[in-house]
Image 1: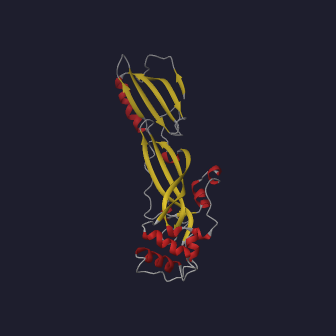
Image 2: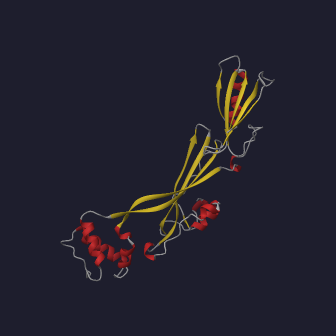
Image 3: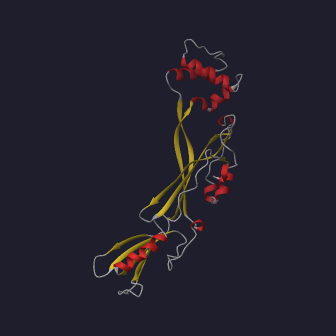
Length: 277
C-alpha cells in the first residue's frame, strides 16, 4: 500500500480538497484507490452524487470544523488524477487469478475401468450392466445369465450391490477463474439452458488462458475403458457467480470449469450455444 499526503488544510473554491490518496493491490481483490477529502459538509454531500455515478463508495465524517470524506474507487482503468472520468466498463481489464482444485465425488461401480473392460466381452455393455443390476437387487431369484469363469467381476459386483454398495470415491479436477472488476461492471450474461463442453485447447483459446494455466490442465486418460461410449473428456462450466466486495466496492466473478467425461447427446461439443462459454 502506498499513501500520498498533502499539507493543504483549507478548502479551495470547490468547497473541498484532496488530503491523501492510498493505493492497494496486494490483498487479492484487485486494484483500488482510496481518496480522503476535506471540506464543508454541503460541498462533500453534493460531490457524493458524482462519486457514486463514477462507481465509487464513500463515507462522510462531519465531526470537527471541517467534514472529511473517504472515497474508494476500484478497477484497472481508474485514472488516479481523474477518478470521475467516465470509463466504458466493458473495456475494463480485470484483475484475474486462477485456482485448480480436486473435487472428491461418488462414482458408480460400473464406472470402474476393469468392469467396463469385462462388460465389452458380453453381448453389449447395456445388457451386461442390466443383468448385473437385476441380479444385485435379488440375487436369489435373478441369476446371472453368464458363466462366472468368464465374468468374475460381475459376480463380485452382485455381492456389493446386494449389500447396498453402489459407488466408490473418486476425484476430478476443476479450474476456477476469479476476476475482479469495478462496481460499474454488473452481473455476467444469462447462461444458456444447456451449456457446452470443450476440449482444453478450445477452452483455453476462447478464454485467453495464460500458458502457465494451459500446461497444468489435465489431459484425457489413455485407458479407453475410462471413456464411456457416447462421451468425450472435456471441460463443462459448472459455476458462474458474481458477488460485491463491500470493502473495495468491487465486483468479483467466479467461473468454474470441471474436467470429466461429457455426454455428447446432452452437451454441444466445442460449439457454444448463444456464444456463451
